[in-house]
Image (cartoon, rainbow, N blue to C red; front, side):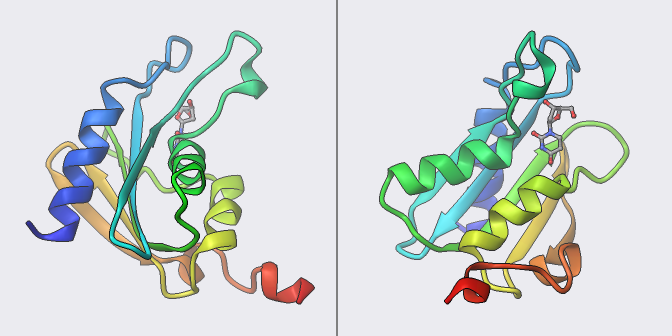
Length: 132
Ligand code: THU
């Protein structure tokens, strides 16, 4: 299967499990690590709103917990008309584990709508190399 199709299927499956009773906006994210393993996450909201976490944060945590250390590609899936691009904090989360040319596929229910590089989403970023 095309890796993008694999990521889309994984994101769709996990989107259905999102805990989003407040926004009612379910998001799924799936990423491919350096070993070719897929890790997925969904948004998990909280009655104390700021404590909620994004789908991308869940996918990154699943990757790290599963032993992955580099993100080769990520797909984010949400409903609605607008592009569901990662929030600012999640762009920085991706920066920790992704190269500037990391493809960030932004999908809607029908498939990928647009692909950005991480550098496009987070230009002139601060990352691990700054501390090397
Ligand atoms: N959300 C994500 O999980 N990922 C994104 O890329 C955009 C927004 C979530 C956070 C919150 O639970 C809901 O979508 C509405 O903002």
